[in-house]
Amino acid sequence: MGELQGRVAIITGAGRGIGREHALLFAAEGAKVVVNDLGGANDGTGNDATPAQEVVNEIKAMGGEAIANYDNVADWEGAQRMVNMAVETFGDLDILVNNAGILRDRVLVNMTEAEWDAVIAVHLKGHFAPSRWAAAYWREQHKAGNTKPRNIVHTSSTSGLFANPGQSNYGAAKTGIATFSQILAKELSRYNVKSNSIAPAARTRLTMATPGLGDRIAEPENKAAFDEWDPANISPLVAYLSSAKCEFTGETFFVKGGEVTRIRSWERAESIDQNDRWGVAELTVALNKMASEVKS
Ligand SMILES: NC(=O)c1ccc[n+]([C@@H]2O[C@H](COP(=O)([O-])OP(=O)(O)OC[C@H]3O[C@@H](n4cnc5c(N)ncnc54)[C@H](O)[C@@H]3O)[C@@H](O)[C@H]2O)c1
Image 1: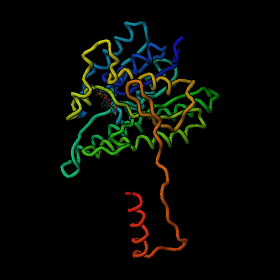
Image 2 (image 1 turned 90 degrees about the vertical axis):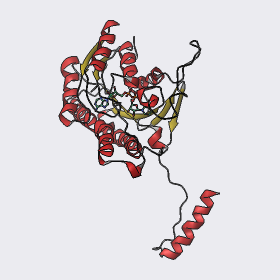
Image 3 (image 1 turned 180 degrees about the horizontal axis):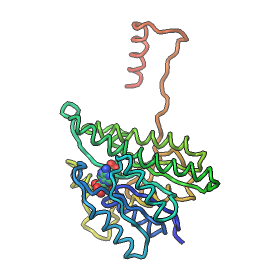
Image 4 (image 1 turned 135 degrees about the horizontal axis):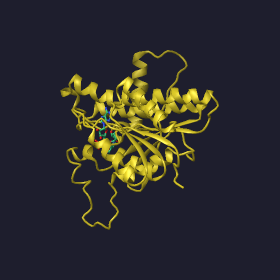
């Protein structure tokens, strides 16, 4: 029996890349999958039903259950339709994997309003809207006495957590997603929902288009060697975080190849406190002393 046997999952952005691998693995582990994908380009422009439909066809060909959904994750009603589709088609919703994403990299001084807005919309609102409708459904179910475990997995990035220059829009959204996940973990524990996020590293069209990265993440020439950049390496962790056996909530994990690393959240470090309001001049002396100690 699969680790996700009989569970119903929505996976956003599951037509390509990492999300596609999640959908295939989830189905192989017995989940019924809503394969969401708008089918746009790297930068989020355009739409195409083909990627989501092809993944559904692959799942059905291997004997699994899946249905395609072409809604935009950043669309409020679209996100509600997605959740309704899971419940109407498969009778319930156990798992939401927020994965859909786009890139519009640019240094801050050249970034346009449209580049900022598009990335914030797909990542931040695109995590919020499906989570909001899923959580409302889970609260309703819990109140009705259906208290079984549910899981949400979000997709963050080291570009945000470790601050990659040239990606202030994407990085801000991705760090926001990690915090969003932690807040959901606290808010939704009363409904038996676990919320965790991942920061993956894998070869997909997004990373292949990143300057300087394409060569490093190419497929190994030796076909027998472990392909550490294969996007399929990400999915077992996401399946675990989506399973009823998952014992974490509010955590973020880096995942690449065979590596899974828990990432520490923000934590308080050096501190000064004189138990009275600081004058600017004396605060300057005290904080510059701290700055020199932090640097050394
Ligand atoms: N590949 C990596 O190394 C890496 C690293 C860090 C984070 N990520 C994140 O992983 C996730 C998956 O990215 P990927 O690398 O597989 O890229 P990808 O481009 O191969 O897949 C992303 C999918 O999301 C879909 N999508 C985009 N906007 C959408 C929208 N508004 N509604 C519905 N679907 C939409 C696209 O059509 C695409 O199929 C993204 O959130 C990305 O930011 C990837």
